[in-house]
Structures are given as structure tokens and as C-alpha cells.
Length: 398
Image 1 (tube, rainbow, N blue to C red):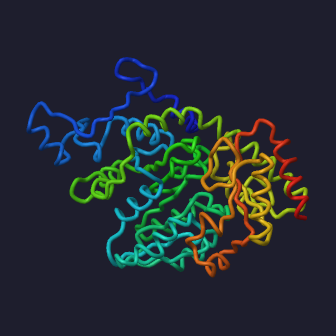
Image 2: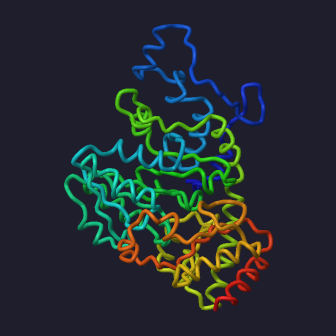
């Protein structure tokens, strides 16, 4: 059997426009006509295929992007949303009802943590947060009413590596779903090949790669995607997390360069992480052999694409981290900004930015230093020059 390759899966998708343009058409209609009234009725009842009703339900441009994302993730189907949080919230609310329980990694994106820890309480849905790398802790947290385990392939921002095969076994023992956010590792890891049931994305990041739009995706089996789109009970239909078709078309074009970009992000991040180690700086990157999750990551990765473009360094105090980041920006290293997957290197102090929704006592419990800097390493042509600039900045605050 031929080994699955996500880049080849994308390459095999025919996405020509209606008049054989090399790019897919952009369908900016909010509503669509029917030649027969009965067909409209049947479409509302979910009895037809290939018919478009209203762009909150399906749109040809969004459908085209979803088809390509499903190919990349090797799932039966996919759905695109207006943001990564739209994908996460729609998925979780589709799986859970009042009185249900969730087991989640403690170390996840701050917005997802806030949704699980704060927002879901009003629906009487409880979340137990655990160290996702502690398999015994995950097992102990499971309950008869647990509906899902939620994790990130590579957790934000501590870069813990989720053991997807083991987590899948635990989830399925309880008839629960394993939901995995793969935003940090597109193409590098194919979660469904390791037991994940549903894969969610912020398309804003590496997948799009330009930081010029916000989008999300849900990749899963056809039954789950159809349940999201159900006009009576589907969260994607009823809550309306719609991606604009113009953005869908733009993201789809960028998918064709994703494999090239991930290789360069990975190459540059590996170089920086090795140099940080030589300096004696506490650096976490899954490509380093002494990284705690290195072997687990190797066991689930598609090795053609490297270990990804995200690394962290610990400067111990927020004051020092802030001074270093400001000076790095002034020195042309990159930008002091949240988000990731951009051309340029982006860096931020996680505890004061993308993880600020996580209470300080929980940050301490998970081991997040106040001086942690997360780097999204860019596509720099001369990464040695980039490191020289970083090294010069760090020498000022030694």
C-alpha cells in the first residue's frame, strides 16, 4: 500500500474553475435558485446532494476548500468555518449536551481553555483538565458521561506532544471521541491515522500562511460533518460560523505551497533550537533529541516535513522577555505579535498574550514560566543571520 502523503493528496485534487481557469471560481452568492420547488424542499430535508441552498449551509467555494482539506487530512469530509474558535466550539457543542463531561489537555490555546473552563459551565458541561502526556491521569479523569478528549497535537504553548494512539484507545473505551487541534502541525502529523476522530484547525495560521484572513476547519467522517450541517440540530448551521467564499478561495490557493513552507519553517526552527541549546538557553522544540516528547513525535509524524516551526525559550521573567522581544523587533528579527505561520518570525510572551485567559495559578501548575517566549519561526532565507541578530540581543540582557 502506498504511503499517504498529504501534499500529494492535495495535488491530486482537480480544482479548475467553471471555464477551465486554473484557479477555482469564487461564488459570492448568498442564496441559490431551484428549477423545481420540490428540490428546494428536499434540500432542506437533507435528501439531495450537490444542491446549494444558502451560503450559511454550503457554498461552492467553501465546499471546494473543504474537499481539499479532507484530502490533506485523509478524512471522508470537512467543513470550513469563520475562525479556528468557530471550528472548536461548533465541534464541542455538537458532541456534548447538558450534563456531559470533557477531558482536556491543561495546556491548550487560551481561547479554547476559556471556552471549556468558563463558557461551557452555563450549559452544565464540565471539563477536567489534565497533563495530557500523563496517560494514567487521563484514564483517571474519564467518567461514564465523558463525551470527548480534547487535545492539540503539539500543545500551545508548552509544546507537549500528545500520544494520539494511547489517547484514542482511552477515548474509545468510553465511546468518546478524540478531538485533536492540528493547527501547529499541518502535513507534519495526520491525526486520524493515529486514532483521532475529529481534527480541527485555525486556518489563519500555517495553512493560509499570510495572516491576511481568519478561518477554521473541521475534518471528520461524513456522518459527523453532515450532523454539523443539519438544518434542525447542526451547530455549524444554527450558530452560523461562516467563512466568506472569497477567503475560502484564497486559502485554497495557499494550500498548494503548504508543503514547501512547512519544510522551510521546520528547517529554520531546528537550526535556531540547536543554537539556543549551544548557548545554554532552555529551549523546547520537538526536533531536539532531548525534548521530552521527541520519540513520541517521531512515531506519529510524516517525516518529509520536519518537526514544525514553533519553539519556545524561557528567559525566567516577563520583564526580561519583554525587553528581549522589543529589541528583537527593533533589530529586524521579526515582529512582536501573536499568531503564527507567517513569512516573518513572530514572537510573544505566552502567559501575557495567547494564554492570558489561563489563570496564573493554572499557568504555574502546568509549568508555564512567566518568561516564556513562543517563536513562530519564519521563512528566512538566511537563518544564520537571523540567529546572529537574536544572539546579539540576548547578549545585552545576559
